[in-house]
Structures are given as structure tokens and as C-alpha cells.
Length: 358
Ligand SMILES: [Zn+2]
Image 1 (cartoon, rainbow, N blue to C red):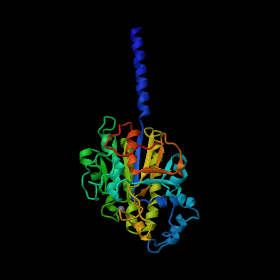
Image 2: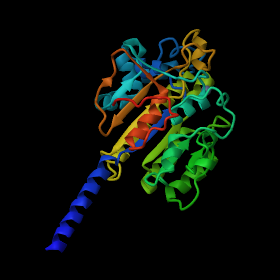
Image 3: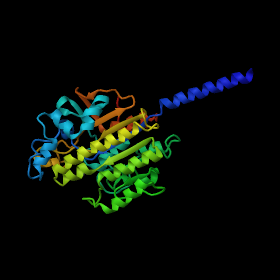
Image 4: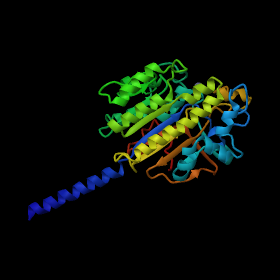
């Protein structure tokens, strides 16, 4: 009899444990699109740029693909996953025309400070003042999670820009970062071997940023194999095409990235580890200018409006608010503490941002 009671108690404790585990068993996919403007996210293709010969060489093709009468139609043509699917299941913040604002808290308005703020939850204008390859003195949420028993070895980052190993401080943090033109190593599947081969054979237009399809597929293959609980994917093309002054490529890249993110989402929804357990957070490291017109190519503290950004959240437990249309001010530094909260982690007191109420 005594044995039986003990057995029942043990069984009960086991059930409680499973229950507790399920409640904090959220996985997080954090994604950034480098320097993608809120203007195109919410209004679609820009009427002043889409037919402008200075920035577009095939206006006819581009208009057919992305020009429509209303902003709603234009943004849906440009970003069909965001505006047909995500809008119904999640939250899209940052349409300043409707009062929803998202801003940077760093005062640099370029990439390293932006990513530092996204990944640590605190702007650091004193130390992070350039895009130089300097190991980040601050601790990212990737590193924090990797330093817990639940998160150890369950974190990974993939970036198109070759500065990410420094932003994430790969060496100190132990977080695996595949970025720039790095191949993947270790026990590779056929697709990864082929990606390594293609990456060597398809030249990138830029010296420090690879094409996003490589970043994307390396990340996807890793998720299939290793099932990280926290994964960060940083797409880079939008910023570089904009610096090149190529509005055509900027729009096509944004359109393509929307489809890549759809592919990651659809993978998670047919994979038992991720299905119904995963939250997606998507944002950008900085905005760009609008006036004078030429400043769409650029950003930095001299460019008016380059601190205006956006964020998108959807997945497990996220209230479906759609496009947020109320007066609301959010900040980029809120993403890191939100991710920690989703993962059931404490929010360290040096983190400035408040977690989002989702
Ligand atoms: Zn840039």
C-alpha cells in the first residue's frame, strides 16, 4: 500500500513537471531585415521612387509587380505573407500615419548600434559607435540563454553581414554564428554541402555581405537538424541595395525576404518541436530618410527619420491585433527583454527596455 502511494505521488509529480515544462517551452525565432523602411512596410512601393530613372532601370516591370492604386494593395503586392497571413494572426507595429510608433533608443542610427540594442535590450552610445569588427562588450540575449542549462547549445545565429560574430561576441558567448561568407562545417547534409559549394561560386555584389538565400538556407537546415530553441536570422540585402541606390533590387529583395520568412514559418508549423510552440519577432536595425528624396539610400544620425522603425510579432500566444492603429510608442530595446520573458528567463537589471505586452 505504501509503495502504491509513493508510486502515485511520483506519477503526480512527473505530470506536474511535464505541465510546467510545457508552459515555458516556447521557442523563439528572431529575424531582422537590415535597414528596411517602415514606409514600404506599410505603404508599399514609393510613388516618388518606383518610376524614377535615377534608382530604377526597368520601371515598367517594377510597376507591374508592385504598383497598385492604394497603399493597402501595394503593401500586399510587395509583402504578401506579412499582409495576407501575419496580419490576421499577429501584430504589426510602426505605422506612424496611424499613430503607432517604434523608435530606436540609440542615437547612431546605423547597424552595429542597432543590432546591439535589439540583441541586448540596451543602447550603448558610449561603446558602440562604429561598424568596426570589435567584440561586443555587452551581453546579448543569445549569450544569456546559452549560459543557462535549458539554453546551452540550443541557440544559433545566422547573418548575411560579416560583423555578426563580433556583435554576438561568438568567442566569449560560445553561441555559434554563421555570417558573412563563412561555410558551414561539421557533419553536413547534402543540401549544406551544396550551399557551401554555391556560396563559393555565386559572387555577392558586396565585400562584407552575402546574398540572403545563403543565410536563410543555412539557418533552415540547422533548424531541421539541431532544433535550436532560440534562433536569430539577420537578412542583409535590403540595406545594401538601398545604399547602391537600386530601388528595383531593394523592392525585389524585400518581396523575396517576405517569402523566405514564410518558408521558415511553414517549416515550424509542420515540425513537432516547433509547431504551436514558436513565437516570431521581426524588426529592423534602423530606418532611412525620405526628404530630400535621395536620403532614402542612407541612414545615420544626420538623416532625418532614420530612427523610425517597426516590429512584427506572431505565433504562440500572441494576440491577433493586426496592424496596430492606436497611438502607441514602442522602442527597439523592448525586444530583448520580451524574448527573455518568452523563454522563461529573468530580465537582468542592466536591461533598459520593458518587455512588450503581447
Ligand atoms: Zn546601411
